[in-house]
Image 1 (cartoon, rainbow, N blue to C red):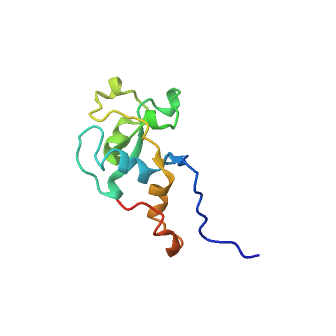
Image 2 (spheres, rainbow, N blue to C red):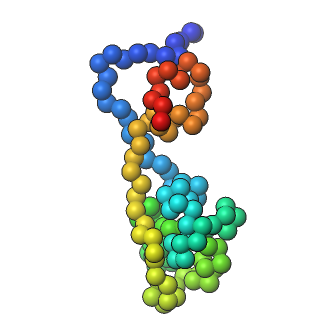
Image 3 (tube, rainbow, N blue to C red):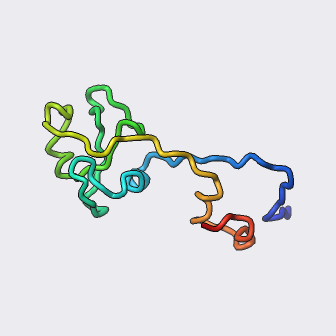
Length: 121
């Protein structure tokens, strides 16, 4: 069955928003590749997802409870709280804002016919 690759919806005004999934790559983007404790820019192999409230103490894996941290600091901290480990956060965890769907699709443009319809940055 043939289907068109582009359909123009003339009166469509609701652009779907898409919130990024919680992955290490998206976490790196949110925290600008910086360690939440030292603010040092981290290479991809130095990064780890750090739970502010440890999972063993009831912390959830959600945007407001995770930060990007140096693997060495994460290993030293273990399952202790920030106070017990003597650490302070310099980057506050937050949920990233949802982006219009066309901004998230642009990087993975599947069909060249879509280029005209997707806003350029």
